[in-house]
Length: 72
Image (tube, rainbow, N blue to C red):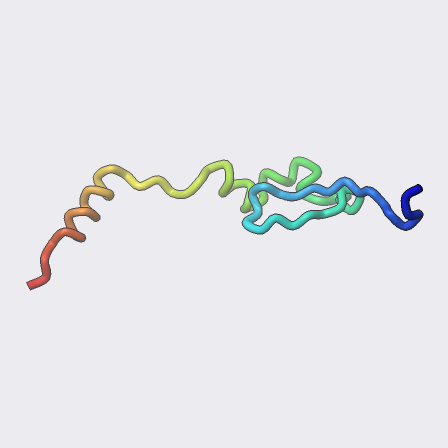
């Protein structure tokens, strides 16, 4: 027989947030931006979807040339 104080809880977390913080799913409310259409305005969601700024090939080549120059 398990302990009467032992409770199983379903947890959720945001994969886009840099730190995994578990939140009991029953604590999430419909007013939370994560649980409705408001998630689209979340900066973590937007960064996760768009990713980091791409480096253009010309900019990358220019950066290599500047790094290779000798200072004299």
